[in-house]
Image (tube, rainbow over the protein chains, first blue to last red):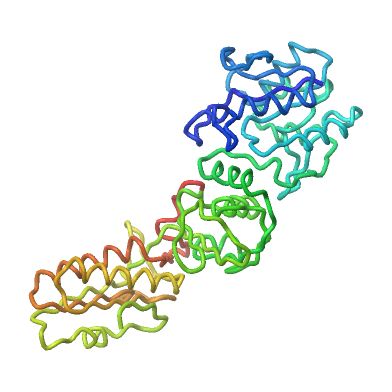
Length: 272
Length: 142
């Protein structure tokens, strides 16, 4: 198996390159992913147009099509390694671990175009911790030519074999500083299920269709909880438009959640 | 009375009475009224809602800050929630002081802070049948 790590993203919402972020244990995210990938793959490639960032022992794989995201990486891989499958890994997977990759490699079904995990919340296929077989890779160039840019929709079009995540939070990713706080909290404290009470007001109440719910969550912070709920219920407000409150007073987004907390996400206020 | 969220009509006279003081030489109040237009569109009514426990807590903090920043005697504020028709009172601030300057200053401070910090939301219902949450309908993420 060959692993391909995505390192070509612009990390705009994070405000800095995700692959150079130092993890709680002091290792750089890219080096961490390379070491993980090595545990299941004989060869590790790094998808980047800047060969200088590829760590020792890995090979940089530049895109052939600019601005086509993960599909461009798959296209470049197929051109360089025709007939070979690839394990594609997103650079923003701060929680992916060895048992998860091992399960994917051990369970992958070569009779299907791809093998992927189900997202723990919406149950849809996750495209960036996925094994793509040559049959799938042969379809990438046509998808790009048809202006397909969404890796998830491409993967779903392949009708992949779908696996349950052995470690539920393993594919929680981080694209913003608040999400990074959340994944770091999970790395430090573990992703332990807890139940909290969430109150909804105004626009969020209408979008959720309810003013109150009990939520079982793996989130460690208020920010992580909001992102879970936003994803689950398609809530219309971005986290940076909101404030949050815990047990009746304003709190920071990084505030650790405890079982039984009452959490309120506060849309922009407009009294008077 | 200091800061309260009410779901029934606000009585301005009650706020005035709450800040009466024989030492006061000046009284200043602000009333926020529901008007029939917003940004060129005809408004039929407004609807307010609040996260009441935190709204009252934050409102009391604002009144405490006003007493620290301005040389006033008393301050009170009531904000209404629920549907309010045109001309109705949405919010009333009342301040008494020995002299008029701090009364004006504190009154202005309180209404500005209430509008920007207290978890109260306002939905506009327009005469054309549409509606929208003020300050929320153009937020990032839409």
